[in-house]
Length: 82
Image (cartoon, rainbow, N blue to C red; front, side):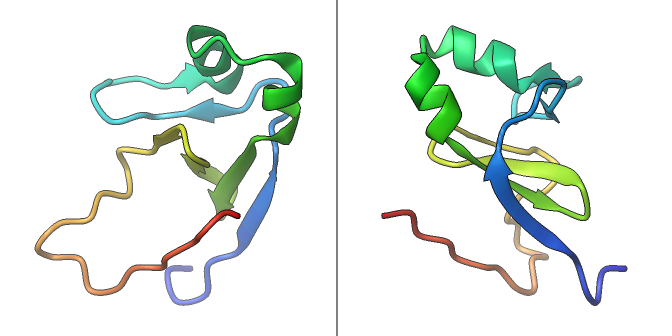
């Protein structure tokens, strides 16, 4: 599956979880938004990037610890939000 990952960019749904850097477990996206004091409009407009149904990035907020860029990284994608 690594050869052809499926990518999805969408807004959050109840129950979405992220495994952020600096934590052993995962957190609900809704809790991350609450900690950041997001308004409902901010919650509704923030995009989430998934790779094969795994949340890897809350755009502009947090990234998953499961996809770090290291010396062994062979390729990366760059996504810009405007």
